[in-house]
Length: 614
Figure 1 (cartoon, rainbow, N blue to C red):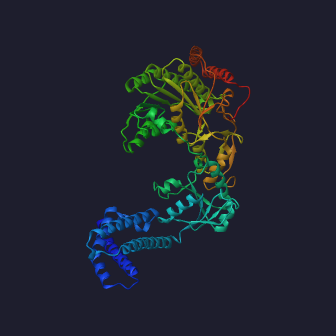
Figure 2: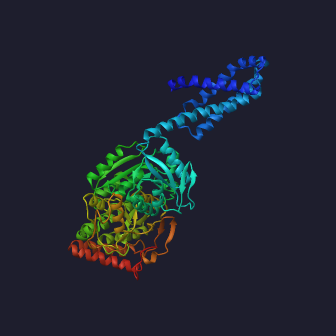
Figure 3: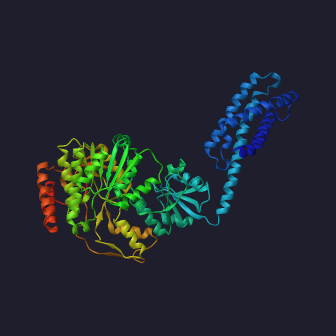
């Protein structure tokens, strides 16, 4: 910084001398009398000292000229104005023989603003021309998707450093008329299709803001395919404008195609029941559990207790958190099986959790059809074990992660989660602990889910396997699901089954086609899709609501409160006793007993007709 100041000082001194001289000449119409020249030289040291003092104190010299912004120009104007005010004060303090005319001070201020602004503009233009010349050969003609604020922000980011993208136009579907100019770029609206605009501008790339909703993203990606445009995702406008991110471009992913509007969270309410508390997460190494741990850690609980039976999984998340800066949260990593009463009793006694998020579960539908005993042991009896311990140890709140497969279940996995929901509700009526269930559909990129499976099949050259052309599922990103789980935990009342608004269902075959397209390949020319048939336990359509829950109360923009029938504690305990007895017989008997229980519960929930959405 000293070197920079030494370089700039002579330049600024020259500018200040020149503007003062010019102001004096203009004041006297270039016919300066001798007495005025005497006062010019007498007042010159005061003029230079005041301006240099303001320059140093304000730190204006530290601002990089080649990246001048409107804010820099305003700051420079403020410095010049402050200098003028101080010089007016000196006008009345120095003897009359040293006084320069007051009008000269005003003219000098105007000339200084022009000179300093001109210097910054020249240096910025020189830098811009140099960068443009160096990147001219390799730059790709690029469209920018979005309105005026988006276009300006991206233009600045592209111009602020070397980039292989050259912006040639904006495309904004909210505008009808085309060929308006924003920042020198033509704006094209809905009167022209994206392929037509790309052809007119000879564009080969398009930059899409990361905040673009998934529905629009799918439409844009299809247009890009027709136009031969390569689509890229960039940080949001707010992130670019605030400088949180530079222009880092990535390819479009399947998560972008399914993105929804961001959730409006009650962060104060969430912090109110998490911050400073002792929080335990079961299934902490899983897809949902690990993301819960990440977001809870950021909310700064007193202690975060991570429980999972997978040694390698706990080791992986321990290594992840070890690489992050410490935020004062004490982390406890425990390898334990939730079905072991002895092990989990020790955990509750030693760690004394105040808040429990129960994400541990077996979730793979066809696999659990083949292993009903393990599904019942883990998902039903493991949950019961934790619920009983939470009640016994006075846990403040217990949140169960459930699934849409618990609605009119056709699979053992869904039936086991429904049994867990029912036991939680029954215990809520007799415990001081607040027991809340959160039910939602599939999450993208969770371990063993359809997206990683499709990605692996595409990498291997195909074919991509889909069970049925009409198969549909609800999807949500893992971070969004966890945000809403935390929100539900904050606003749910004991015994509630809270249902996340999953948006519109997506056909699995469409998901497969989108992933093939995003991989730079074509269906069916490059990779085929093969239909393999519905697997045991699977439905064509998943549901989030029982019939009695249709029209459920919306307690948050993305959360509903279900109104399913509650079983009494005595009835539930009787049913679980039968289930335990069946476990001692055979897998088939255990399967039959649980599915029979699930049918009774489904009928109580109103199973007169199939309901697919609310």
